[in-house]
Length: 186
Image (cartoon, rainbow, N blue to C red; front, side, top):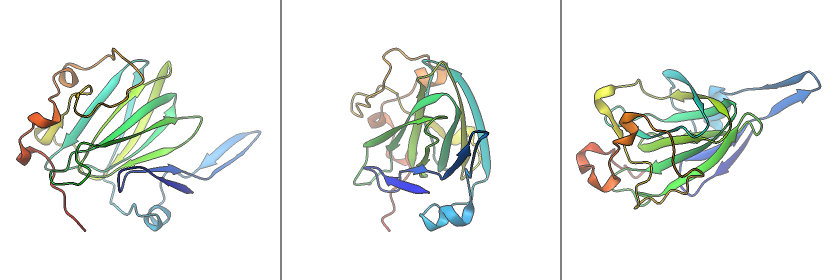
């Protein structure tokens, strides 16, 4: 497995080993021992599956408390996936990293707890899988506006299809500090 660092510490792109031949392919999408060796040793407690059509944007979501780390994989199609450091006090606060994930490139993206996460579908449809380090808690969730001008995320679409909740996302600067995850140096 190959691990590619991004500009944000802890946010990594993973290229699993893929064993293929004329019949198809095999790859591990999670192996606690192997992933621990590259720094991802969290205990995943919930798996989610999402299906969306071209132009759908989901995010930028986070939870606090109950911050969720996420290991994301595209099973079918392609998405542009984004992680934003929203940890109050972080030297990387408000910075983002992104990657194209697809069923073709078989890459994974690890988004640590304390980061907002979102993605948009760039193929006709996409099936998106993610492992989470904490359970979903509706009362702890927050949504940052996908087009927050201070973040200036370079999304590959201009007019995404949003849920009502995502359409009402706030700019990061409008969240009270106590609603955001805290940065812990260490």
